[in-house]
Length: 494
Image (cartoon, rainbow, N blue to C red; front, side, top):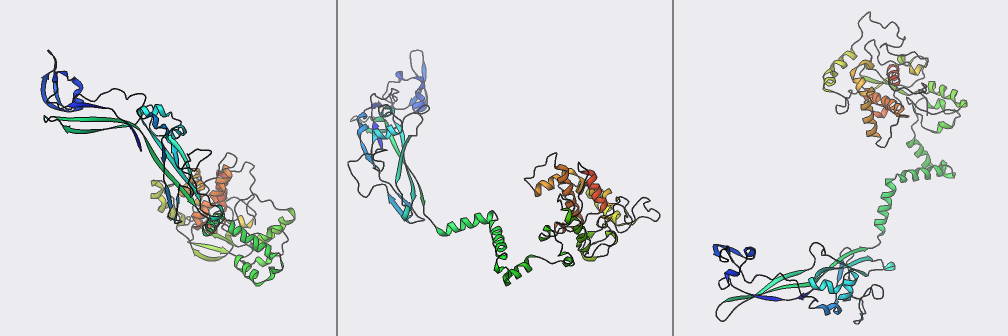
């Protein structure tokens, strides 16, 4: 809808105009003919083929021609359709009072608007805007609740000005009417129209309750936070404390959930509170045991040991399932699987030089020591010369079965297990939210170095709980990332 103020001027064809009255800037209003004509006695100018006189640059008349249109009213009809719910609604009430006029407080649903009120709601002065025109937006927002018990679907109207009052204020356009005079001369009337344009913008949102969608969203939320597993475990634990705890279901559940390891029955009578937890062999921890249970745990360690060991000069992993009556180095076990190929993370640690020497290191590690080269100060159970003395049988383990080069002296061990940059990258990759501080950095890097060695030597983190790090490797790691108190817990059972 456009309100227009009109004023016009007449112009003749360039062939009949007085060329001497043309100004040098008139080429902006037409096509240059290429002729140079005299403008004044001593001034010449380029000829332009255009209508003359040119368009007037005078301002539009004030006050506006249609200033009285402020009291005009307009009826806006609008309907909106929600295809998902197959629902259509109109902005006209079922019972419309044709004498009503929109008012934000008294009549917010009336679709009849007074033009002056529209500009007033947009914080504009109608007499001022009517002179040079403007663009006003009428926004209709539908926010609908289509549920029958909470139905609410009514339009809300708002108004604002779209054109910029500082840069390009107002709204106008031009059009012309052409005709010929009786003598055959062409003539036109050019109209430059100023007015107010109203743009109607419609926005809509429709909502309706859906039980299936609700169940999906709730289920996704519970699964995301892992509450389903926790809730089921809690319910089963509560059920075990009731009279149903002896039912067939709980027997099958316990048999499926828990694995009874060989020799574990020998320690089932140990009266300690931690026996309900899974028995796990780790390299370092800060668990403090009660004095009454400490001796029993040590006894359990020697009576129900289930661990894995690996040697650099043997292509397999050994499973030990019997009490330790001598050092772990000489305890015989069962071969469970082939030794995996040692890895090397090229992106994080290995240089091109280390890659070239990798095969040589593998060959040297597999070669026994030459005759007469026995390490003079080595322990009886040590074959690499780098192990430290210890009285615990389960810590008397060397990296080799036969005398030869210690794995801690190789470049690969330095880069994969001891390199702080490699450990930090791998540690932050696995635990991205871990904060490394001066207080805990040595402890975190030391623990992760053990895991790096297990991954390297055993080929997987799956054996981490029961894999034993050799004495020489553990001491080398502790020397590189020492504990401030120089006290290490060592092996223990959880």
